[in-house]
Image (tube, rainbow, N blue to C red; front, side, top):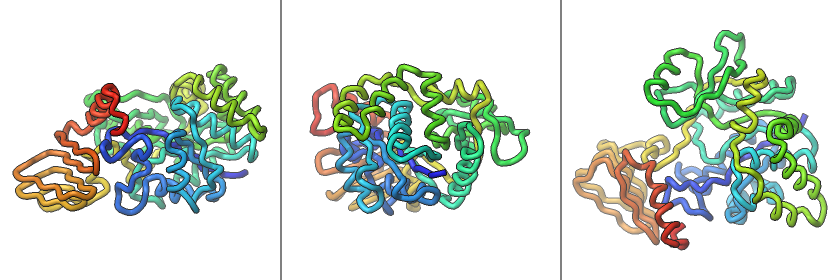
Length: 358
């Protein structure tokens, strides 16, 4: 059975403003100093799928930049451009329809474009186990990550820990908990973080979309029926923006788990979603004062701060716990502990009509 990589890369990465913009979001940035995040995702998934069988689903406004960024790594025709953001059920369903209608059924290995993996060989082994399981069973497989702290920012997967072997039945999905509940989850040894990585047959996800969200499937089928015809792009542009917004978790995974149709492989691979500026210490070593310094920066008596320069000399004196980011057209300063709120700046700029900064 063929193996297809599917990389979800349509997000805006607003928490990394002003470096991340609509046309060059987080997944198109080199935050690690090694390569663009999407290219690192391509290399990881290429350990279990041929590069000619890797697809990237991205926003239409990002498609050209994505094709340029992944040139020589992903076939340009495998960059699927969404005319509008419609959440992960539509994104994954679109990729599955593309695969089934143009290439034939196979196992999809689905990952976000913008996560960091420290131990790629460990993830590869998890992928291989997941692919084998998906080939042998008509069930959904997801990857669970061993919690390292009581996070209130991640969803959790409860699983049957008594089941023998690496693959466990999922009992249920849990939304982001409060800290006390998260501590209880970790103490029980029956929960994993929901990684947002999925492995299953393309035909199976389409069948279950039809069962659980028939309206979404009907729209995807219209798009699929137009594939390989001169009307393909026209129909995609007309139909896709009207698909109902819903995540794959709500649309398919939760009802499927209730029926015993979801499996999880709990594992460790040094995963981090690197969701905002305060998490740059995952990608870079801090100096003796706990600072992450990138670019032309002079910091005096600075502590526990992230300071990024894209070109201009950035100086800081007697500061602590700050994020300072300079780009050619903007400077952003915020408290490190409030770095998640950078997206509020993007919202404010959008409301003010400052499109040139988005």
